[in-house]
Length: 178
Image (cartoon, rainbow, N blue to C red; front, side):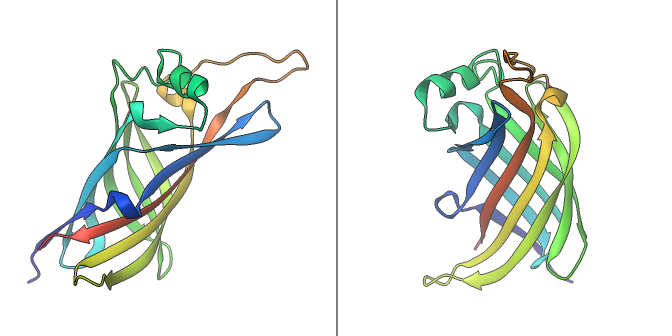
């Protein structure tokens, strides 16, 4: 019988990014710079993994101070009252040898809602210091309005300033606990 294994996110080799339509013509990219998380597996088998990732909303970065401050405000994330976005994985189902459907509860802005994301398993390898690491590429999309992030502005030509669909991308490397 294999034992329970804990893996923690290696923040120096991980990133959580997003894209959202602006003016209905281009995408604006952003990232969250402060996050942590862990996964519990049986041995090195991720198929029944339990994972939790926490993201500090105030760590949002879009390369524009005014926009970042607006995103931290009550119009969007309300970082003072909702300082953490949490994803609690509830399932990881294989769709092929290296691809999975990752389901879980996304808790953001006081709302808990189940989402599904595509997760590509990059494999397990050892770094030069002998630490075992596992890698995943994660992608998907959500509608920001499902979490009460409703702010927008109408455009004179029709349409809106900020799109509702938010595309999520994450490259995550986990370190196996010794």
